[in-house]
Figure: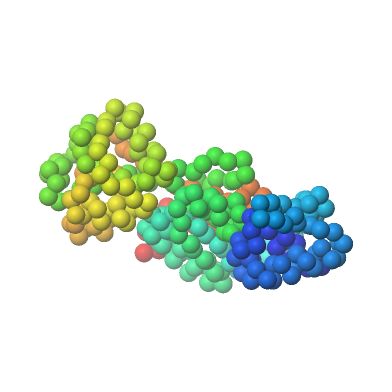
Length: 299
């Protein structure tokens, strides 16, 4: 019996999907079925109940799952300890990130990391926030990068930094002529927002509600790139992370207007499964993501 087969079995139990378990382990669905069949023959037991409406481990399968998780954790810890003794930083890191972080925040940190650890391969996937959490909990990725991290007993949250939020508008918009405005000036404005289920949208809604400000949501999108494009055609104003609009402001396709009431920020964090044993490469990756000095040196 190989340790890989136990890992495939555990991933199958956790994802409840042959397709997802195959994706996580970079094998075919047929290979997953074969490995589960091999384990069932070895233990002379049915390990998974299969039907159209039911997919769960049998009693024997649950016992195998619980003990396998302990074995896998011990194996990972042993492998990582040997790497640390040999001072080896290698392997693969699978990352799922929301679009705004992946496109604008992550690149300089990733460049710095790969320059320092060329033997490590980093695979990045862009996801909606809810999908990032699903991928982390389903073991499809090692780390997730999110804003306004949810508190979940199954997850570890690794705070990174607070990113400034700014108001943007078209250069011809009346607010573009202002050096700065108070939040109440947004009352009645046509507003380009994120979709209601996104963490940043929920935070902005709460901010406006607390200040008793009502805006007219004329467009809603699931990522910051389309929000910016809508503001560039003067469809309305928007509040977005500062790092996502530096190029547009420099090119003068958008104008940043200061909010005088206060400085507003969104918290960024890395998340990983509570049971995850971090490899030396993952620890170094998180350390670089945490260090704000890396942005300047990685450019």
